[in-house]
Length: 295
Image (cartoon, rainbow, N blue to C red; front, side, top):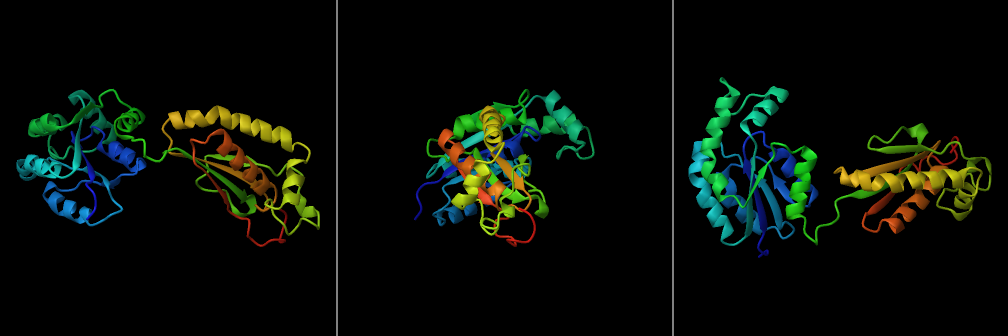
């Protein structure tokens, strides 16, 4: 039998930010389920108890149906008997909710053929007792999505939660295309190319002779120092802005020599300077057709 689970129930007004809140819990390592009918909650709880690897769950529950509303408070009480449960209610002013619906051009679920404000007021009346039962009420009227994410992290990030911000360092070859997920792309094709030395042509930047050749070549130290200086300045800002990860792609022609050497050193230096950030290294094209074309 699995240990008691930690449940977070995310509910509240439509348009108040439930999707953003759910995505934030995903980044905190929660198993998330969106728009679960409350009547399925007991069965879901039973299934989760059989799964040892799932102990933190966030559920977005839509309470706009009168049928669901009549039973939900009792379901919450039952869930709290054996589990650690927190109910988050997201609220916002009527004016702000109307504005958000106007921006997205969506109809309110409770007023598909009528005025948005009528649907909002009807939903607010329906959810009055649910709001009173909530453990945490968050007013998102003046909150940006980033600020709501910070609020979730502030209240639910535990000491055993893996750090959510991490750095991906990647080497690649321009001849095989740009990485689609790169946030920062640096081109090191201006550095002397080890490919033209027969002794290094079929080696990679992981080999000491190639690594030393690249790092000691003209312009390499100045470039690397400037790159590291830029990253030292920007990395904390990326994390503060709410990014979950930053992918830094270093490219040369074929992705086997220059880019590999620079990326390899960069990943090690970043890990030393920022032990709080997991740093992963990938050499995308290192095994592609060695010897065919420039690198």
